Length: 410
Ligand SMILES: C[S@@+](CC[C@H](N)C(=O)[O-])C[C@H]1O[C@@H](n2cnc3c(N)ncnc32)[C@H](O)[C@@H]1O
Image (cartoon, rainbow, N blue to C red; front, side, top):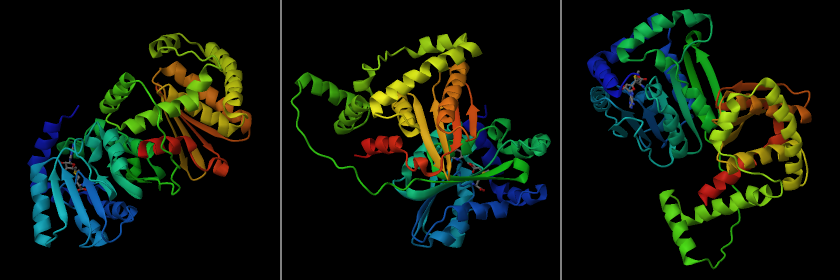
């Protein structure tokens, strides 16, 4: 794996030649000027906005951003390499811009300011193997309704793939090797955000991913204050636990009660017993296709009974909600994202390939039961299953995510 010091050395070496090297991109057919403009336009910035560029380099995107945000806005450029920032500083000074802040930092460690109006990165983010975490932190820093735009290289899946060695050859002085092309920043970006759009260019070796942080719901959940008498020891333990989780006692108590109301109070009634994860992983190793069929067939009536018991009616929405409650209660990651009429249901179980096949089959059969005519698309890895289906307005909001968010926000 390329190390941080290799990246620093490479960019130090080429910092004063970087702008010239970029001018050669069009010779390779990369209309870099067009892509830069598309990136900045996609941020939909307004005068006075605060914007962060991750891996700003010598500041080749600055003028495009400053045109949009005006002198009353603020641009923060973050880069790892001193010599690249020296070039950026020169550009800022020459142009007399006094609303550009340059920060020398690895973006993996960078603490975003609160409530920014736009974040973008061009040909930089996939240098960090921790790009997923950075994107999640970017999501948390953005104001609702604001955008994260990522312009980056990827491995082409089309016929142009045969030219990959040439691209690797040209970008290797900057340490952007095969592993860089195989990192999928747009997948992380789509995982956390809503309203995603994605397009490819240059034979599938370039992508532009634009995403928007969801607007907060304007209706705030009503709350009440209540007093309970609890043993002092119990309160001490809650205090310690809240401190360890870096959260408030109020949020912790709410999470505990939410889990009880959502799941635990029913789990006895439906005779649910917890099984350690490593036992499930072990069981998964030897599971055959016939075993998977058998388990799916046995689980389906249990799910139906549970949904009826917990939600009072068996329909697709209640069924999905119950499965999500189950995943939240058992600590599995799940998400439901809406992209136009398409709904993506994402389950990260970490239990291995056979449980992925089981999850895929179970979800397909549940959707098929309610919507036999709909086309279902699945993407399955050893730890994750993504089911995509056009549900339109049948599911206009994601209650589970909203519930989770309101616990954190209150
Ligand atoms: C290909 S240049 C892109 C520069 C600029 N975004 C542009 O469009 O011209 C990649 C930049 O990312 C920076 N970079 C690479 N890894 C980084 C990291 N972990 N943290 C911050 N910057 C990083 C490099 O120093 C370099 O300036």
